Image (spheres, rainbow, N blue to C red):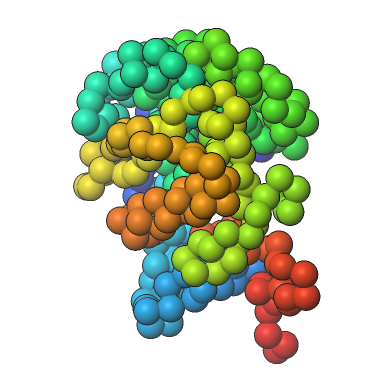
Length: 293
């Protein structure tokens, strides 16, 4: 891992078009080598996009591996490049970062798992403090670099799932915007089975519940690649009206529907290699079983 971090540091000096193409080349190789991850991605695409042909899904899965690999290598720019370079490469829409709006009252920044999600964090960190949940990395060196990279501008509070919900509520009470990434399968705890692309998916209801408890507004933000290796787009969406309402499950379905719409805009950039449908309702078989050879 230290060797990879050293290589990331060296490569971050490259022009973005060269680094982006390098990342895509690595992704193409990983698509061929990582059979289990390729199976997960293709299974997800078969479930979520049955209107595509199998050939189209294979192309999309390969593009996802390329996009994901590219985003990993480009994190070197996020972690070590100058602020001036980052400001040239990050296009905020509608722009600028709505600091006043997100700090005048408790704010949940809904950030679905697109491969460039770290770019959204950097765009905000250059302007104001925020807080977020993060997964502690097994490799200590990588974990240290990750934490430093996410907090090298304004102070950032990073929580782990083991910290529980209280630090999040305290941060929101202090009007510190909270990055929320609720679209992964963490099991049945604190989750409901809610349709995602028409498939019952164990979905955390935390966005709706925290908004109801704190009175926080929900402002989606999504980062994607700009065309032709020009950088990244960070788009802030209007605050959701009348959210969450009285029904936490309906509010969670509303969140999933929003994510579905955005995935269709940039389908290769959504995190398809995650077992989004791993947890099944009682009695249902796994959707990720590989056919016998």
